[in-house]
Image (cartoon, rainbow, N blue to C red; front, side, top):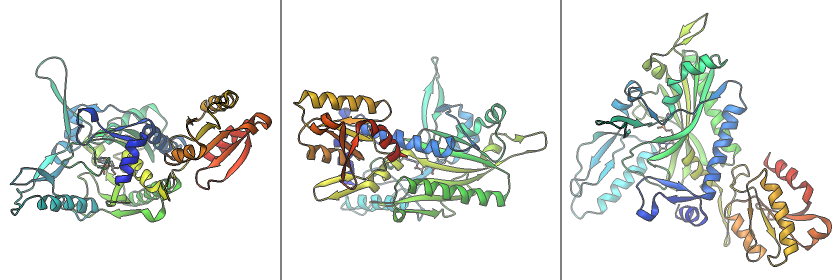
Length: 430
Ligand code: GAP
């Protein structure tokens, strides 16, 4: 973990939020490479969940919603974690009663804390702590209290009728969304894993209201989602699903399973598959109406975290080979698809030729430019950030218009015509 955190800071993936002012607990800023990685994850998710399907449409709802949404959804009442306080120093922790492994990580924090005191630590009784964040709107006092959305989900539900009426969707169909959510987590930690501001990628899939359909679509989406992570390179042995204990399920869930990753801090959830039944649409008084029928659909939800995915893709891709560090990110996720090097920075004819290749590829791909130091060092620098291909423009290029293409994973090199580079990248990224 320490190596990942250091790499993220050094190379510009992830920085502590508001760092020059001492930070702000549970917030993180994505740097030049981090934003590319995150955008790539979101783009691939959208491609797989919306673009390539005829039964899913997207929305992008507001972060601030009428507070009644959160009363109706049950979050004002039930979106809580159990909070306990150390009676000696008054530091507060989340007391997770579950047997889940996130729970185990929390218990580790608590037992760690007990070691900080010489005397025996006593804890207060657990009390419910609501995770919704508040902000205030308007120009006259008292300003209106609203919540920052604690899950992006409700934006899909409150627009259910709008989507049905403005599109041609018919049940079964889904509404997909990607966006920020906010939770006043009691104990943010494990780098970006538990943050107070984070991004979710969610599908709300509306189905007929019965158990058989529920089971069928739950299994279908669980399988799709696991396959998606594996298709982008997560190793099979590092991913699993885990059924929620009865005590663990969220207030809206009839059935819930987590997709977990074998993180350095233990198996940890990065996506939840939930059967929310008719909980939400009923709560908002919404129904599905056609000429033939009227009923309250059930919802199968897939709810993933972009930040947790980004973290786990990074961890899964990290390799050390002697003193060479390689991020074997899937090319679709890699921040840069290729890096372009003129062999020598002080030969204008090489630099000019390389600039031409760079400018051309830039039109369609994120590509890096590097002319510093020797080629070996430049390869190492690109390996460390996961760039799958390095293209070197040398003296032979000036004669036969070919460049050296070096592959990050095999370190093999081949010569390719400049005019074929774009097609080659397209093929490698397909
Ligand atoms: N709409 C359902 C829902 O929000 P959840 O299990 O509470 O379900 C879904 O959250 C996903 O959102 C999690 O699997 C995780 O990837 C991400 N997530 C939740 N809380 C988070 C936090 N504090 N920091 C980072 N990601 C978080």
